[in-house]
Image: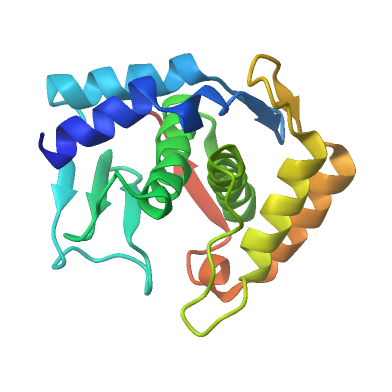
Amino acid sequence: MSLKDDVSDFLKHSREVQHLNFEAFGYRFSPGQYVLIAEKIDSGEIPVRNSRALPMSEGAGASWKYGLNEFWFLPECDLTKDYWRALLAHEGTHSVHDMLNPGKIETAIAESIGYIAEAIALHAQGNNPIGMKGGGVDPMRAEAMRVVQAMWDPTGLHQMLLSAADAESIRGIVAAHPHTLSQGATIDLSGLH
């Protein structure tokens, strides 16, 4: 299978996506929304690109490109590995959020939601947060895992709800992070065209 087929299959059938049933910052996410993204990949409306030459944030292995409506992955992407599956849960959630068409929103909120989805995928896999290359865990990923553990539904049947206190906590950590600051204060989630 191609990377495009692997991404589509993950969004339609993965155990991780079955747990992406949550509400955060007033936005609701459910497994069926990821199937809609997969269908757009299958039809060619959403390209899946695999190239080291594409500009992504430093250290990123995957990216949802707002406005372009494209997924970008490094060539070594291997969706049989939990690490890449967690990154796709993160970026796939950005694509679903974009599909919801909320317009301009705070970058820290969009990124918080992505990190929560990544942590949900990792928790469903039985894994810890993704570590940094030099060791340790990035504070955004650590906080995302903490809030996911607080709202976790082991069945995946009930929508998990991020509490107001946990929303403020993760938003504050994400907003102060250099990765988020480099993206600007707001991001335009203007729908899929």
